[in-house]
Length: 83
Image (cartoon, rainbow, N blue to C red; front, side):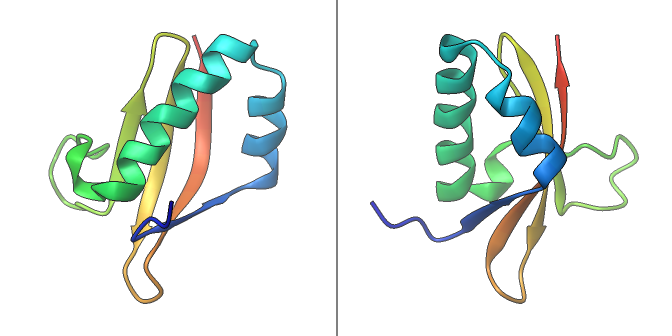
């Protein structure tokens, strides 16, 4: 399936994702696929509403932050916190 926004992942984040249990990885994958379809569907990470391009994805196992890069439509997954 082709998504309107390609997903690019920072190396440190990819390394962290590899360490997750399979179920947590699958949950995150589903959430990120949803983000690729509708990047603005997840809440803003900036609580002061100053930057609407940084969003936060939450699952039962992780909190992940991504930026929406409009010039070449893609998402940049730049941070992950394991709960």
